[in-house]
Image (cartoon, rainbow, N blue to C red):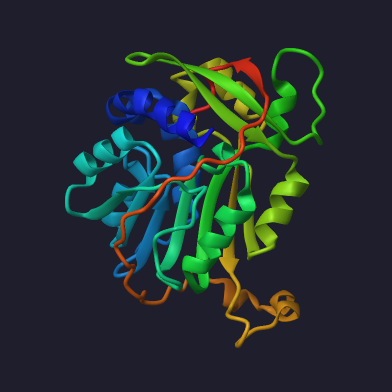
Length: 291
């Protein structure tokens, strides 16, 4: 299924490079502002991984805040688009997040992953790798489709607690209709997966900016009553030598400030992609979900 995701985003790459930033209020006026609000204003000198960088919008923003940014994405054309956007201000690699990351332990101070884990069946492998490459007490900021959204989909009745694949059909100006595969998992499963490796600091169910209203009043009103995305900010645990599992609950508020420390360098190796098992997908035609 991961190869299908790569092919789909190859087709979508032109739209993401040239139209999504301005024409998609789900990005410009909803998910992105809420994510940026949870980041420190300065990332000067810090090593940052944009995991699933797409056409490079987040990589560019993180570099502008002073971060030493590495971006990875499964799509060859998205990688090319990201390189055009960021130039020499960030390093961009092609890599499948379902496979082990091509970086050393403790390489990054911060990982940002925006609307990417929805496409990955096995969160355990990916989150373990995020934890491995983060420095002790490093930060993870991720956004995903809100699990409640599946219940608002048209079609036959759905079991919220059933983990399953489904397919959205996106319709973009350049690419036309593109089929994209996602995985639904209930909130308790999401939280359980994250807390295997991280201590959650914030959970945000964003609401749209007022600027969304002038672009799409119907969806603006819907997003103010029904969550569409979910944002999680979490911190990696200290190494086992410094902090035991049972000590995590005793961290003070001072321990969870955004005091990112200077990073170590990441090794620049050629990554490999890896497929994960596909599941029978439910087809849902909807163009509301952007990344």
